[in-house]
Length: 192
Length: 218
Image (tube, rainbow over all chains, first blue to last red; front, side):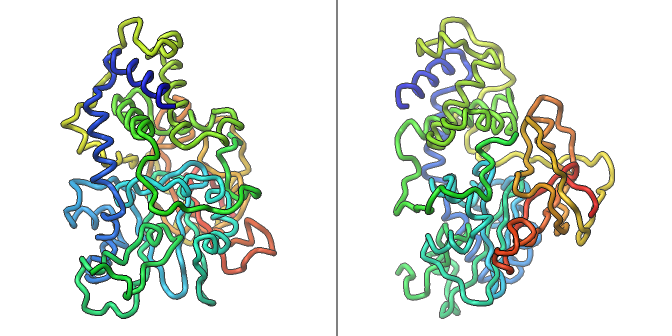
């Protein structure tokens, strides 16, 4: 594929459609600027600041912009809150829609046939593949991203983190916990 | 279209296998492929829905055996040739043999930071929303041969309108060049048993994002 994509790039550049410097800049941005560290900041802020959490759950696009992580967030970002009663999981069965701005590019498994086929039918089985078992009494709610709305899960704040700074809380927030295939790390695993 | 891409509820693909410490890209060409797709999208020559349709139209066996970025590369090659932006002999040669067409705009490196934000697909409503939260709706039993965002597993089933998400570009028409045709978008919530039968976990709930033309009152 290396040669094939290089040929494609060469043709598109020689035709004047693309600028290879812009291609380099895009790759750098996706490798360094965009990623789940942005989402982790959003979650940590929501855990710490009830007013922010309220806005986040009402209009996540608006709330995320106020953090100053990025100039603008695309429209239609929706945050869904995990509780002891309901665990949320995000999937895109038709392609691989994913909230790039807050989570970066999707991992291979998110785009794979096993995840896309099973998440809507057997989400507890999928959670088991990730080593996650939910307590009895926690229902599973799956969100299939079939339009331009994008979803991020607001996981439950781990016990034993009272009084922690947002920076420290953010170290507990995993990418998978914001997709709903994982849980945040326990307080004992915080980065020092 | 009832294509291989419409995977919700299929069996037999096995376990989900997360990769530890997964890199952003697994090979250099993956990053270039992603960026080429983004840069060509920026020119305005096609819409996001047309590019999705381009992936769905790949032959099923090729779809299943190609990585995500390989599918993106094959789709881009196909679109470039279909739209007359380059010819097959140029793709084969790996060089332009004729001058390019003039496109609306071209992405420069300095503008990249501003293109990382998704576009807005919200549009002015043409008419009032037909449904409101709490309404029971049935998804239509439709099988268009062209692009649609109503997955097969959620067709001809009864659910409840959970939220109104605004009026959005309608993928089913924009993907075939019939215009944005804005439609109201709803989150529609289904009981797992409604979709998968009585053997299913009774507490399971699944929602889709459904455009108004997919729905009728139940």
